[in-house]
Length: 289
Ligand SMILES: [Zn+2]
Image (cartoon, rainbow, N blue to C red; front, side):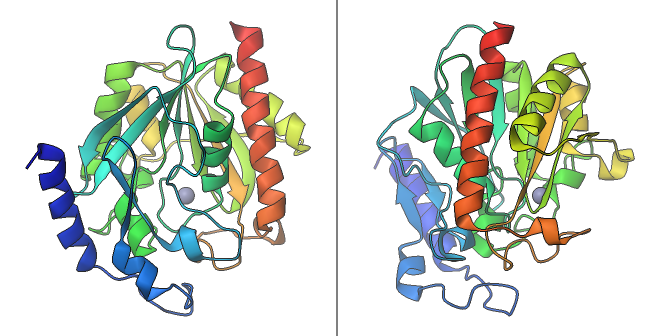
């Protein structure tokens, strides 16, 4: 049995012991037959679990690769506490500017899957993309904001209690991206952190989406630091953008703070949003080459 198969066996046994809670805050229409299959397997044998984002509403999707394209490389950057693999894919040019996109941090946030899908359907031409489809496969599988141990990864940037956070920081140090883009939902705003590249690219995305205002991402105290603070700790001066998308469904991210009517959208509108983000990112990088 190869190492990959042994790992698959572990993942399968863990996965069958977890079930997505069927509460008023989560979709009650999660098909049990689909959940019992638990995972999608790509050609490299690494798995992204199915989860609430695959089923939350008609037309929704999770973080598996739905395109006909394959990345030029795929690596396992860590394991969750339940031994689910955390993967990163590389797409596009291997030289020049490299951008890390973290598709999902909170497991109950689903809109970002549409940006992940756009980037795989139409890989970037003007920058190299390191894509972590989901940093929180346990949360995605369970339908929770936190990981399986109750850690909010985006308050763990410096404490680094979670294996997911440790994996992201080690990977940041390893590949030293020029920019990181974090995808969240459902608050419908965009922010930048730590420098002119992030501000420039963030402004372009804001303008393309007709949002008008670019916010700053901010910092938290060390005990609840954001992930971008942790990145700047391991890679001094590291710049990032935070894209808070509107939700694809009112069932998405029920615990998110500061919701407003702008927080809610539809699969159709989020698909357009995602396409604009992908195109604007690629255009911005062309000018910065
Ligand atoms: Zn979030």
